[in-house]
Length: 578
Image (cartoon, rainbow, N blue to C red; front, side):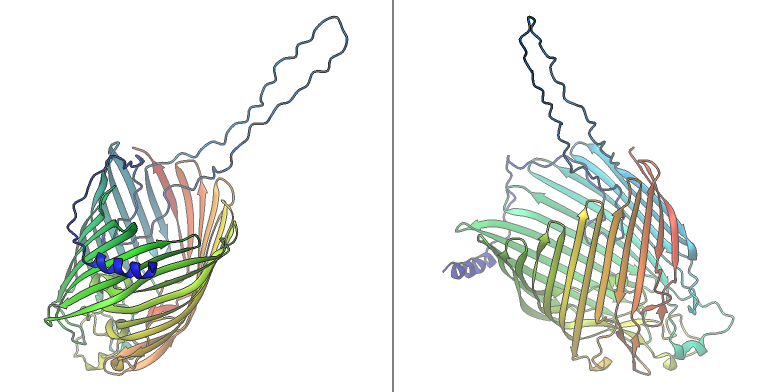
């Protein structure tokens, strides 16, 4: 009966008006701490790698005062002896490490690699903060097998403003990102067509500008709302704009918790320059969606029962379609915290964008096909838990079915282009081609946290692919690995020395060459070891030394694009307050 009511409630939630006004409350209290500067919420341009600006403080051990006991031994004497009062022995409490609101990082390495970061937090008043984050990562290249220049750069700047009060908090972020790279991955059959003694400018670039805002309300039907705008332009005259509105409501119906998410997502773009394989010169999509759900609780179980409903409009084709996806998350405690069974059954509409493609693969052609992907089902079932206070695990199996999924295929149509050729006509770019993908996966993870000074995490995943409706690329799951694994560890040797390491393994991948001469090749698996050593000179200054790709050599993650070999980068981090 309760489950039947739950389905009724989900249906009722779909009809709820989403124009509820935020209602204030006097009970909402916000912690008045400072805002830590992190990479702003999507789409604030990039998820740039950030290093913790301050170390973790080990201050969880409570020092107990040592008890003092004494006794008086009486003997028959004329005088009375009165002992002195006992005194507690004093022990100095461990000194807390000082935290700083700002930091600057600078590193230099071989290949003339340059790393620069700045994070600043300015307290306007006790309820208002202004944050600035600048990140730069560049290299002058020098890969042995690169045919053209292989330099790259990635620079981003974000400025955020946040305010909080008893009823709500809100923030806005404005930012920009500029990326440059080169199409240096020339296919073997095109090497003979590269002009001798001529410096071919094979550069490509993307500039992204964004403005986003987020507000959170306390004791209100409208829990939070997000609004974001991004605009992208490329060095080859491609443009793209995206607007997203994401309100989230929460209320009670018949004493049950109901949540309702709403999504409005509009993407439009155009290409003024075509590559060797012509694609549509414009695209435009509007996605309207709702996500009602109900939370059910018991002594040993928790269930979030919901669904996603989306209406997608293809404005260029003047077509529309309605899609429904499951959104169910459930867990059941089998043995305290040691064994917990769980199931995640979801799906959704992924709005692929040119910005996403450029972030993932900078070597795409000047114009590529951009279209949404429908994840009809994305399910995972498994068990997880903690066998002890310092050992956790997770084992799972999964199945997903994606309709109109994109694959990166390598251009191979150099023989069809005229001479002289343009920089992207040497079989050195990637295109996006679409097919339906079903994936069966098995995986697991384990984490060891012996104490606050040492932790280690292991992840491994096996995937088996089946591609249909991809006849144009022989139904090859191009560039997708069949196995991945990683080990991430961190060890605080002393108060001054810290060592971190990451070890990645990526299995073999099939890659498809499209265009003039089609072919399927297999990319070798590789291991990539990275080491990060830090030495705290004083509370404000820390020196670091990094080693990247210590074992992998010039492996190829993308077909014909070898990466930089062993890289060593050193520098310093300075933390400070204004």
